Image (cartoon, rainbow, N blue to C red):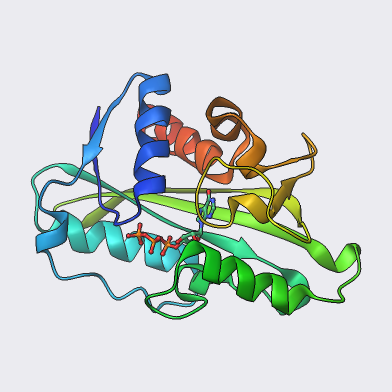
Length: 195
Ligand code: ITT
């Protein structure tokens, strides 16, 4: 089994390389990704965006294309940043800008209101048709300030409750075992293997 990842996010690429390696499948970045017009991720659900990305990029390759739409959902903020996680603080903002904005929105919230969920939907497509879609999530709490050095995106403020550490304080192996992305990818592989 071989996949090409259609993603502009180096953090995702690193994790998928590790996940594929652990699962014994081949995965690489899509070589011509940056030359292709970007997919407009404006759908209201992670599933539509993941499927849309996989379909779009698979039209420019003969390979099986893997796409991932993911993000952080905070019920106390009516689901924000949600499908807008990447653009939450504007189109050119950094991870730090997004974290600062989210922590600002969380100021004064109770412990219960700090509950958050990371969601990941993976989709694979070949030549404009979706083959499989799979999703999973991880439950956590938003910290009051960033903690830890590893990972990417919102990792330093997502306290993964099961291990009582932020995603950025987990080893790479731990994050891959427990994360929304690791679980969704393995689910996707088992669906493909069973088909
Ligand atoms: P592609 O669409 O090109 O893959 P992207 O970064 O725009 O890259 P998304 O639209 O799926 O990806 O946005 C997901 C955002 O959610 C991402 O930019 C991160 O800020 C955040 N995110 C997703 N998974 C994460 C994780 O495991 N750890 C931290 N932040 C994550």
